[in-house]
Length: 528
Image (cartoon, helix red, strand yellow):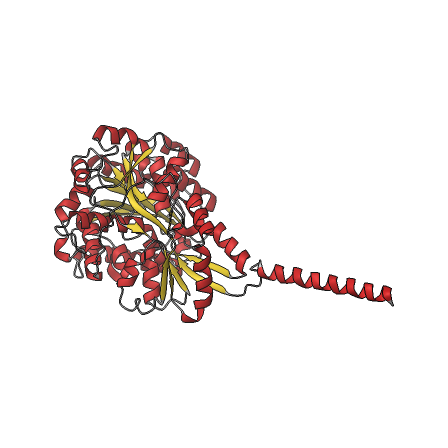
């Protein structure tokens, strides 16, 4: 009897232990999550993946991140996107959109990163900007206008770091410390400032990579403080960047997590509580270079020990949209884009229809928020190089009026509607022709932006090979080799060759296999 009782207690203990083990396993894995939070997020949050993985292990909740550009994400929310949460580096633009304020049920900032200027140390020494507490945005504009300071910044219509920088500089140049109004936009001063912008991009990460690639011809870069700190720590810069915080002030990205659906409040609260724990805040600071958002955690020694002046943000959507339109159509350097378009026989039917629709949307057919800013702009040059078995047509368009009744846009639409498919695929003959066009244009207008979009649905079967093209490319003038190519992977296009072209030229491949071609072309516009 006594042995039976002991044996029963042992069995009971083992069963209890197994039950506890099973319970622990359930609470620390997301294979069968308690709840899944669908998050519409900015791509710069990809570096938080390890932190979010540990949140899932800790709580049993899952976080599904769906990355999208800030403007596109705002538009999706306006159109009724079903995401539970929005999480971008700033929620200011989103909060101005009609119909979104009511959807934002709660928001909490998670981390902080001011958008500031990184300047090569030698340039900062030459210009007297090292530890200069009186340096202003106007001082920088004076050097930029004189082409004495050349910098990189993202496209504010595509990336939040560029958007925040544009708003901040515009506010600094206004005549009032109050929130920017339409009449306060100082176009002349902004033209001076952006005269020195020599590199653009559609994301802060791509901009950092492009700056590193072209650092010998640039003096600085506007980006998140966290990105600049990461660049300095990367070992890839020839000389470090001095971080400059102009006297008038800056605007800080605060990365708010915004609740969109009331029935997800409980898991939202668990995520926010986890991310704002002191130990998690320290981990975020250490791993991403962003400042903590809670007073219990102090910024470490990488961050300047100074009070940052925060500039006012516009309180009107109309003011923001006018500022973006002014930047694209009047303020920034003009751009020249060469579209290299495959019209071989395999493009017939729905493929050619998709290509036409994508180009027509850029020529004014897309009237959505993101479509208006992604479309062709005033002062822009567009060249279309058509190829099949050989290059058979080159047509350029110079845009000075992109209004609703623009005859120039109508010319583009007529040209696009006339595209027909037939013949073989001479990709690299066409790409070389595009570089001849863009390179010759750069010799005449060296301060403009240049880029090439390569759209093909097949493998090269006519003319020079990829290897021959790359060999020719290496012998071209250095100015030509700063022009990136953005291939679109579509149909039976060769992924390996297209990635090689993008990597060699400083571009990136866009996926037209799993996304609508019109959306892909809109994304590319952020890099032009």
